[in-house]
Image (cartoon, rainbow, N blue to C red; front, top):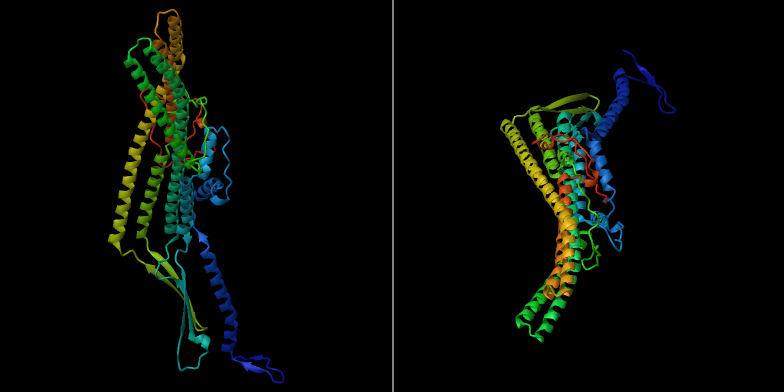
Length: 501
């Protein structure tokens, strides 16, 4: 037996310590180091996130879009409209001010933040315990104390593979929210540009019908003067009735114009009564490519609403895999020590004993996957049919505008000139001259309506594609006869169409 001498207090001699006492003194730094390492390990694990592949690219997309929406609305500087705005000015202002699109962005952001929530590991909080043993034996207080550390028994510690799969499901939900944001942007674009096209059309119709009303007044005055020269009173009453009817129709049109202006201002976040100047003629049309093969190929994987369902199908498939992972047991470690007397390490195994519940969740996930796949298939078919119908509508309005402008309107003007010359030669009546003067105005109304239909159909095509027409390629290989574009692929990555008009 060996003894070790230690130096005592001043004025005292050296005293001897037993080997057990020496061993105990040597263990104290080791226990403290182990405790520090254990605490450091818990702190390191508390900040771990099992992020799935693709999460960073989704965050990058979100950050790029969020530059416009992160500042609070009260702090944003919304650009004023110019005196003669064009559709790009109207749309840009609406994107910056509209609350529905901003709300869709923050729902997307919330979904992206849930990726870290689902991927955080360990998913269970750490539980610390302390026990003190009462005994008649002479023991130090530290040796009577038992310290334990483990994970909260109320929530089992999941295996990393399960947590990572849950984060993948959260990523799928974030991608769905991103596609819904894109749908919200195109819904706003549709509402703004459709309303703007109607507003411009109403402005032109007001100008044309004001001019037509002036001709009607001349006709009514001529009829009233004809009564004194022996004309029938019935002709005067008919001319006056037509004049009153046209005046009432013009007032109705002006009222509709004011309502449309209020709607546009509301979409742009402006007071409804503010003036809004519209052009007296449609700008040069944004024409579609003449090659329909370009448009058909562009429809392959662009439909925003179909993209939403495609992302939902991906999420359902990952959710099914997560439900199947419940068959794997979970393991939770525990650590503890009682003073300097003992140290323990344990494992708690959580067995999947709720077999009926696990099987039910798997069957539920399978049913939801099948439902999403069926909805995706039908939505793809519906949107392709709608897309082709819009192309036909645009082509028909384009044809109608060309025929009216190049053939019918010049012929109507020539007919009006011939009627004037015939009236001067006594071969025509004044009423026929009036009608010939009104005919070109009616044709110009049809031309304006055709241009408005072209603009509206083009807006619908853009929203159907989820792509600005200016971003379409100029040419594409033609499709074989009778072949239609394939449905959008479920697992293809979709790029967000940007609208900074």
